[in-house]
Image (cartoon, rainbow, N blue to C red; front, side, top):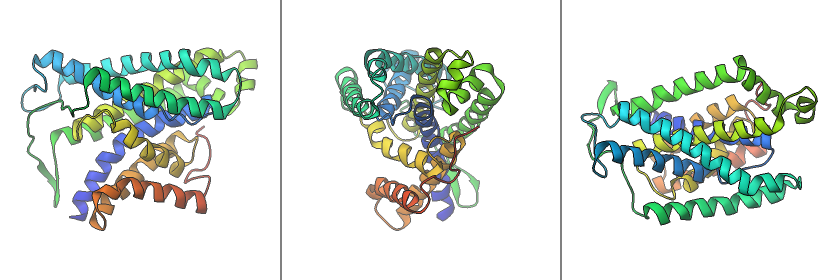
Length: 300
């Protein structure tokens, strides 16, 4: 039984890790805690759902024995692009103006307002009812003694690993990735060195929102799609980022896995309704014992 909960925790942690990385990128380069990140996650899930419905021809349709395939990959790409555009629009309308004042508290409060607005827009456009990518009921297969998972869950974990590797290569091998890291370390020095800070800010929103979109799709694929899903997950995202070391990309990945595993293992002792409380308790404990987090420094 413990092995099954551990596997479920890794699956949940994969989605949390991707969302936490996007949140950390925003904090690293834009220097504020973006509470609207969870709503971007929700929008990402719904953008993908629109494509799924368009391909299947019927709401909640399926693509055969698996709920993913090339149409679902197309939905993932469309979701990432549209969520990135949405993040850029929100930045242009709200955060771009407030950044000029250089008052971080104003940015944080504005992110709360943006989160509420985005969440209510989802309800207005798609309605409050839960949605699903597929009506198929997948049969979980045993992959290890005491561990059964569905093809969708394997898809989530494998693609999460691929995206983490791609992100690492992007940050360490590409000119843009190195410029983003330099800006995160010292924006003033990066600007003096000839880096276009405004372009880096835009790319930060694109990368962070795209990761949030994928995290939202993964969560919707393994659970369900709801307007409040991102809002409910934002505490997990912040807990993961703080646990790993706020500002650390790789710490966010590690923190996401730890939070996911701890939340699912807590079901052995508490009601599933207390999962957010477990994430919050871990976050508080880390702040008291090791405020810098597990890695405790910005990723380099």
